[in-house]
View 1 (cartoon, rainbow, N blue to C red):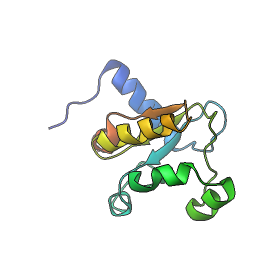
View 2: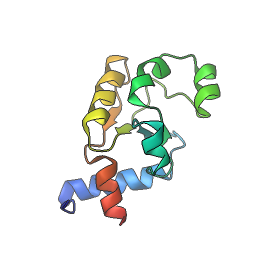
View 3: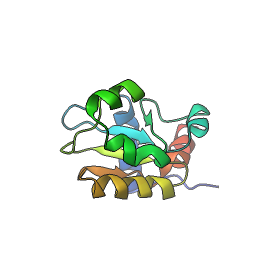
View 4: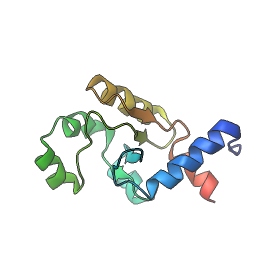
Length: 124
């Protein structure tokens, strides 16, 4: 059974949950990216998260903004965006996605280490 997050983890979880509802990409606001498969995300995700499976993330982040918009119905993140939060089911793919985004110049990329599993437990 999962332990309830405490202290900094609880505060971070609260920020990510709030950010899910404010994914507009404005300065200071987080954008959430669910890097699980489409099937996993269809079964449930953090509200407001954009699903881009980790297997296609590199090509997605290298797309022209118009192509990204057409494919994902969302604005492409900018290299200078400060709060890009990647998550998966347990944390491994989210970390992989974060490292990939950083290698492409997205310095504001962050991994939600608790992942969807922690968020779901908190919401239950």
